[in-house]
Image 1 (tube, rainbow, N blue to C red):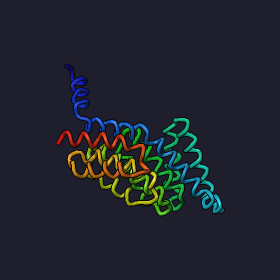
Image 2: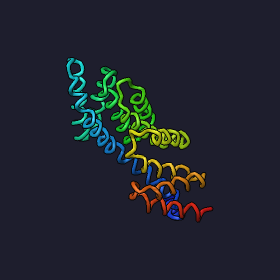
Image 3: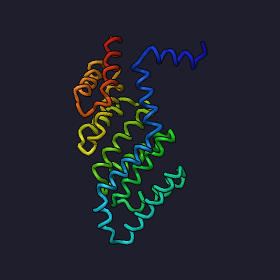
Image 4: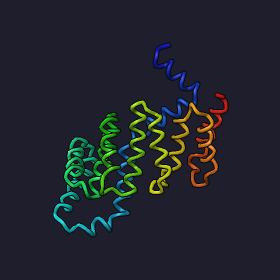
Length: 222
């Protein structure tokens, strides 16, 4: 049996490991898609405030640059998108668009398997004076994925725990709890507790079966 087949067989024998691999691959492949959805929601929610205060030429310029970055991103011109987002993040630091741009850069680097750069820009989004609570919460989740890629699951867990405490990310809490259950596979009691929370949560129906399967796998392994 070659190495790849052996690894595949091992993952099939361990549902918990298989679940972690699937979750990691999904988050990595879909990080920028999730980011765009989050940014779109943030713009819609804060659109009145942002556009209502477009009085200075510098803020209007930031809006233009950010818009160009979004269009380049949509066209999968990621190098151009990164250049635009970097311009907005570095030169308009006190605006919400700067925080959004930093978040988009972190998400793109995450998709490109560059967790170090992703961490740098997600931290910039978190620490930006112009950020909204929504962007900060999403950046914490991005930091979690980046540290998981870097092989530091303990720090990944800490950032996910911050997301759970943030009401701005309430729509992501079910997904975060499931990831926490997967990341805590070496701590069955903690992982099981997250699974039970999901099963009891009537708003997390999409995760009920996944949580039940993971809970069963944990019980079987222990």
